Length: 379
Image (tube, rainbow, N blue to C red; front, side, top):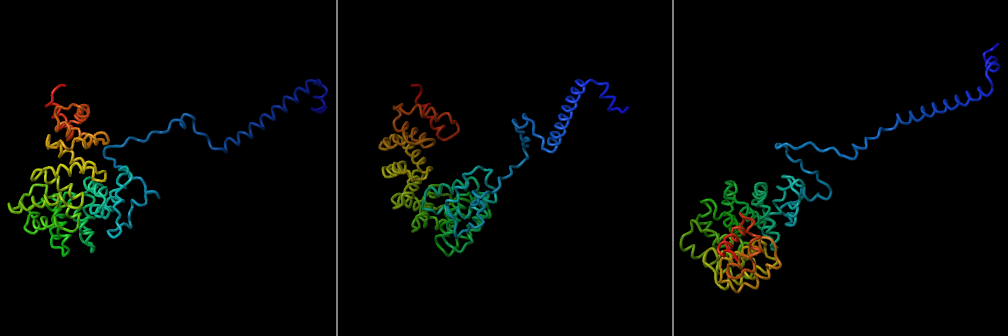
């Protein structure tokens, strides 16, 4: 008897039906498990949910690690400035320095030297302010490009480069002083005057006969930028000048206070305050500078400090100072408050501003506010 026949004879039908169903279900389950197992093995394994929710922290930087500049993108292409030369320099390119320090490299800053040389001779006070800020912060990087500017064929470029070197503190750079001394012999008078103004009052060679004559002569230049630079420089100590030259410089400063160009008048009035003292004309110039929104911020601040130094003699400027307190912020607001307190010591209307300014203990406005409040005593 075969096995199949024995199975059919000995196993009841209902048992055989149950076993068939069980075996069929087991086979289907095994097949499904095999199929999905193959699919799961071929698919990429998902990252754990916790890992996706909590990004890994970057390793801490060490003190010796240098920041790697961000790569140049299409929106930053002007920063590279490979095509920016002294012939086509745009002062507005200096706005790139307002970016985060990690977004611009030292090489790109060096490439802005032509823009700085153009900005210092710009008629726009904002361009000149930007140039001075760039020279103050990045002068050591801009030096090589500015020295190259002194060798350019365009005299306007050479004037700009010479004036920019003066704003970068050439007295500590022997190579810059040497280049400016050579520029004193430039066949273009304007370039020689710019070089002399920038050298003054630096190293001893800056007060040589030729340099002194060029500085005093620059106040008569037809170029308003040179007159402006001369007016600013003549407010400094005239070390090495002969008595007759000092008298000539003081006379020139008074003459420049009546210049046709407002920036020149502002600079001359500020220089007159430090040299010869000021009168009603200079006080009126300071009032005009305070109300001139187009003037350099530093000029407006210095005008407010100059009015403070005059005390009650500057009483005519009180309405202007009150107006500026209501519309200005920061250093200018504090300077105006200090000026009002000095002009009228019995008026306590600006005490709250003075107390706020006094919190910055080691700034000019902080020191001035502390002194004024100490003199007044408790209210």
